[in-house]
Image 1 (cartoon, rainbow, N blue to C red):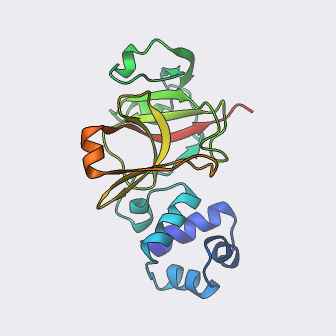
Image 2 (image 1 turned 180 degrees about the horizontal axis):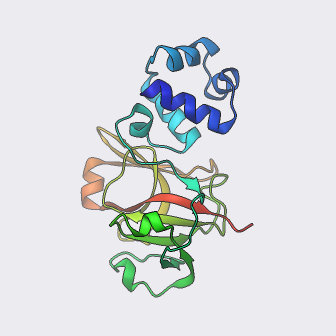
Length: 209
């Protein structure tokens, strides 16, 4: 499963095996072994691959069917509309947030899957270059996420923030993709006491410019 998934993701990005090997810092032979023999790379390399392709480590390994974050590809005809929120204050249910800046239409598939979704306006450049100021992300409400997914999360009772979510045995990391911003790691005790809470997982990205 890993071999086929990796090969599909590599081709979707237009990378050759040589190009991928250079990006992640391994020999071409290593990439060939991943794709032909199903050899599983180290945890660090798995994380690097998941970040490169915008999918979770579990998705890479075939342990999750959750799709990667992707630009809108589905027709919107028949889908309902949701409000785009400028911010999500802690302690307020999403449906009660008054900071509404726009509204967007969901795909028919989303509307029929029985899940709850909301949209959030990306502000600032902490997640650049993958997310730019002014982008809109569609978020599926759920209290947990696979490692490597982009999430909207609360920390210490503050407004929800968009970050890449990395889980480990000792805690969680909320990673800013822009190296100019600090990446913060929280112990399991921090997660419980602060707390650090996942509000939802980014499933779609929309850019108007």
